[in-house]
Amino acid sequence: MTEITVVATGLRFPEGPVALSDGSVLVVEIARGTVSRVLPDGGVGVVAETGGGPNGMALGPDGRCYVCNNGGFEWREIDGQPVPGLQGPDYHGGRIEAVDLDTGDVEVLYRESDRRPLRGPNDIVFDAHGGFWFTDLGKSRRDDMDRGFVYYARADGSECREVIRGLTTPNGIGLSPDGGTLYVAETIPGRLWAWDLPEPGVARLDRSAGTMNRGRLVAAPGGYREFDSLAVDGAGNVCVATLHQGGITVAAPDGSSVEHVPLPDRITTNICFGGPDMSTAWATLSGTGQLVSFRWPRPGLRLNHA
Image (cartoon, rainbow, N blue to C red):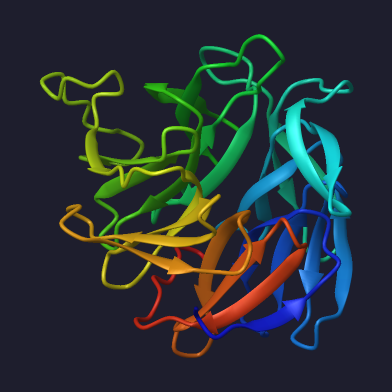
């Protein structure tokens, strides 16, 4: 088991960690409907109230924090902790929001793409050109569930368009160190996919791949595990938060090796890197409502605009 430090407790289903230069970490609390800041001493303060279901987030080129809001869940309690489930009764669609970290102001940038309304935006990553990729996992209801998509959007609110379809619950998303490869993790199948990016906002869809999403399969480790959000380390390894088996699944960029770093929560939902040498990892243990930190054996990838 990895030696971990518990940074904060009592969080209401934390996700989307973003390490800041002052040593604090932004997280969303999905069940609370907030963007919150965790200080190095463990103190927690609300930065903004988004409502709905704030999920993945990333810093943009204008210094604001861009949030995937999935629109909210129907919640249930397990061992005193909230656990998300079906589409919530007060659900009114998903959205992409921009949060001013100084004032807490929340601006809704997108509620729909060029093809359809957003259903359940989940995770986000900015490229070096100031645009961002995000996944839309969709929503589940008692008898049916949405298809998933990957979109590319501009931070000024001028464009949001579908790029990849044919996905089942797409969740974590990230870019390779050179920005030339896009990675997406599917939750329920527990699969990690990749697409080459020949130019900003364009994914090369391989029609000969034989897959519905026209991407290449990087890893599908098997067993009962589901994939959540992800981060890429400086060596290009894709580090995927893993549910049920509880921890981080680490895949080489070509899928040649896959290892598992266990953490003490079966609902481990996200990982990010930071610190002076980028070798500190923070993970959200959502089942127990904790943010924890630990040393990573390699420096993490410094994100664009961070």
